Length: 510
Image (tube, rainbow, N blue to C red; front, side, top):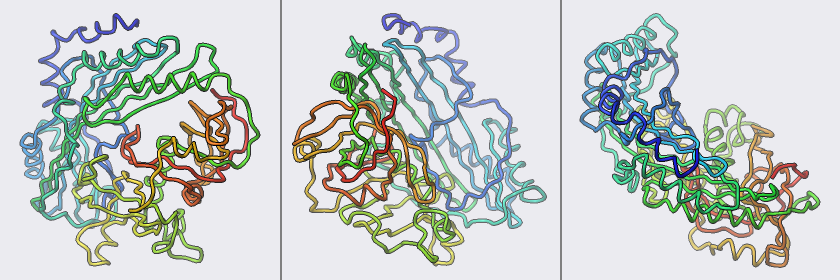
């Protein structure tokens, strides 16, 4: 669809269906209740993560965007569930409603518009030494009762997970700064298209493709002990790649935001096209170990894999992740990274806030996983919390800031380049596991890779395959920059310069 006609999508069927969609999607979401049987204590969950997009069951075109449940509306649903539940059971209710908006473009033309809502109620029942979940997308009494029945039947004579967790007791949760934006909630398809068009218009002479996402969501958790917690969030991102007309150069840029007003789409497009132009006509160099300058988004996926799959105490004690110590036990208390680095999760982080509790109400407090290079914490469930005499499990939000130690001299990317004798500048890396337990990755450079010689970028180079790990390159740091929110959200990371990054082969990729 040519850009000049894209706005027609915003009008298709809108007047005819607006009222019906609001009613259907908000209060009478149809869909069968389904059972889920799994443990939840100490689960590594985070509300509305950017790296785990909601599965959208229905796709509709409408300008009726930004729908969420207010605290009062969600609490009314939760109260009904608790009334339907067996008084002998410990019951947890999670009520979510999210609206996902998406604009895609390819070959400099808008191709897809999506505005879809998903409502879901999850009922967790703990009884008879078992835990089970019932899930429904229906908010009416019949749907809620069916979800309760699924969960409770599974704890009585069904395949519920053996073991239970303590209920989180009533408490107050903080409101993370900047997590919610009324301006973002009010964005409609017309405004989203205009923002995408403003980026596409800057890519004239290049072949561009990308995605503009915006999510508005609410979550309430309540339980039979009297806990009520409510969180609402807005977040979005623009990711744009550009290729040269001769298909030899490629550039990428992106940004994550909470407030839609902070999204400077033309600036993002300018960065992508500038990289594409400067990467035109790359030349191959010999694969070897090089000093590498990595933008934050280049290694963000490595950090995600570590936080998602390797920050669990039980796995470390069982020898199944990178934090298992030789001969048994864990590496907690040992130096694992450069002493200038700390990994800290904090829902109140102004650059990367997130919901302050997980789906069953376990609070996310400020937690140092690594402090001054020393491994301090790994997540654990309720059984371990009881053994330690603690009120709650240590839950992992899969969101983290890589924070330089106070007093560390921070460097800009330009300073990293100007003081580099010979190295490689990398925009992005694709990432696949090469060794899961040792956290070794392989992949290729993409979207802008250059040779740095005697303090300046001298030429674009052909993409290369690498085999490396942040267990290596975050221990070989030469320079660290100011942390910023990465384009995928969830992670606040600095640019870094590291020595001896392992490139193994030339990659046939643009």
